[in-house]
Every structure is written in structure tokens, then in C-alpha cells.
Image (spheres, rainbow, N blue to C red):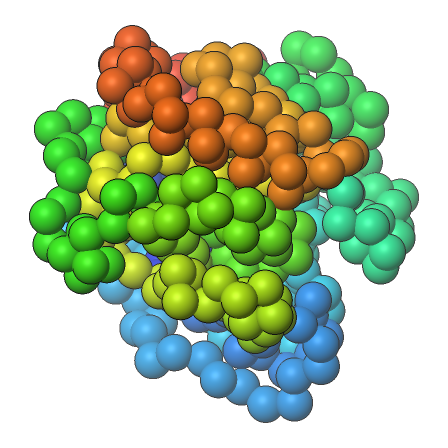
Length: 400
């Protein structure tokens, strides 16, 4: 089957959607499909002139990425230069032109994202060319507040409902996504719940890394956060909880892994004001291999994010055998319901709850008690399983 994957950004961008498209495309190619990815060459919110959540950008700072390549798994990747950005949407004429000229070369199109330009472009061109498309919206939640919520409301009216109603199939990564699709006019028969996946072969035999722990001066305990450094991801709640935690567990390090989306300086100021800078490590983005080593070496993973469509980092932490403390909202509530963990009520005293949960993990040694959850993650949530389930969706669309 010839499959065209369309996304606003792609690897080496390290966000959840980008990782989803990367691993899905690779696995589809490995099981025998002909896969092409069409995307932009942007990898950050502020590398294209325009307006983003980080403010106004006046000039390009795009990385030097090839406009076309075939990766080691045989996936063909076309990258096009955006002309401008408006909030989460990139305006990329070359991408639209390529789709108009080549969309009929594929059997099916799968577009990713919601508050982006690509789903609208695909829906219009697919309608003109009579080509079916599948949509994974990933994040339909507007809990950022302020302009974010207003932008999403406009998007719902302006193009969201049209895109959702036009799709031949809608992929929800968690049950909450299903409800969001229905609220925006999606039909129940369109929707299939297929969660994100993990690389089973890379997580099956993970052990704590002596090198990682040595680099951190061998702390007694390690608390890990993985996510882009932006306010809604909630790293500030962890920083606020540190003083309470180290009063009882003084030899503890707190590692924050993720690309800075304009919030790192604020977190570092907060740590300095609270007198905990010496136990906070901000690594920036790390390689996938090193990230897995951090997962396996941590005593607990904490993600107090108010806006997760799924929570891939939480799933990866569980696959590495590390207990999780998660916001009981959005896609993270699905992770908690599937695997358990320590839920956070994000409406009250979040930092106090984090401190309490982290100390409970330290005291009870919960890392040794999640083997069943780890096995479930490895067996049921592999990318191979996800790709095969999606293939059945594609086949179902094409058979209509």
C-alpha cells in the first residue's frame, strides 16, 4: 500500500506528534508499505517568521535539513520551507503544491494535527482529487487558556468541523479524543481508538545507567520530567515541590529533559528563588538512547501537564519500569486508568500533591512493583501493533 503521511513538523523535532509520525512511518515501512512523509523543515516554534506562543519572530533560524531524503527504513521524506507562522499554523506553499500535484500517487493519506494548516490543506485537496484521508488530531484540548482557547474556538468554526466531517476515518489516541471528535461533529462510525506506541526492542532489557547516575554524582534518588519546557507542561509545579522533598530526601536530583519553548529561563529563576538550583538539571533535548537511560535510571517520573492528548513520555517511563506521577486530566488520565500510577488533581495544591507522591514512591520502593504494568506496555503498545491496527483502518477505508 502507498501511504502518504502529512505533518506540520517531523524529526528531528522532538515533540509527541513528531515522534508519533516518525515511529509510525518507520514501522509501516518495516511491515512492507511504501511510505512517504510530507512536512516542513521547521523544528521549533520560533524558527519561522511570524507569531507563535513564544512571541514575534522576525527572521528564519531553520536547521540545515535535506529537502528530500530516504531514511534507513526506506521512508521517503519531503521537507518544504514555510513562508510564515501564525500561532501553531505554518503556511507552507511548497507543501500544498506538492500535495495538489502528487496526492493521487498514494492509495491513502494520513494527516496529523488539528490546530495546524495541513489538515485543512489535505481536506480541500482530497475532496478535489477524490482521495480518502485519515486524520489523527492528537490534541484537541484547549486548556491552555487565554489566546489558545480563543484560537481553538475560531479553528473549530473556521475549518475544524469541516476537516473532521470530511475525513474517511478519525484516529483517537485516547477515549477523550473520541469525545472531542463527536463534539465537533464527528460520527461514531468514523472513529477508532488506537493509542501511541513504544519501541519494544529498545525498552525490553533496560537497566539503570551507571554512567547517568555517575554524571549526577550518584544521588540517592532521581526525579525525572520529560517534555517541552512550556508552561502548560507543568515543570514549575515540580520546582515548587523540591524544597519539601529534599527536606526528607536531601540527596535527590531533579532532571528536566526537553526542548526549550521559551520557559526555561523562568524555571531557572524559580529554582534560584527557591534555593534549589543545585539539585535541578536542565539537559535540553537528548538523544533517544540517552532518554531511555534516564527513564530506566529514575526512581519516579512526574508530568503535571494540563494538555496532553496521550502522554507518550509517561508510557515510555512505564515501559522502562519507572512509576509515574501524572495529571489526572486529558490523555494522562487514560494512562492512569490503563496502568495505574499516582494521580494529581490539577485544580488544587499541585506541588503539595507532587511532593507527597514522590516521597511515597521513595518510601515504598514502588519501582519494584510495576513489572506487570511494564509488561503490558511492552506487549500491547508496541509501534508494530499500532502500525498493524492502522493498516486495517486504511484497508477498511479503501474497501468502501
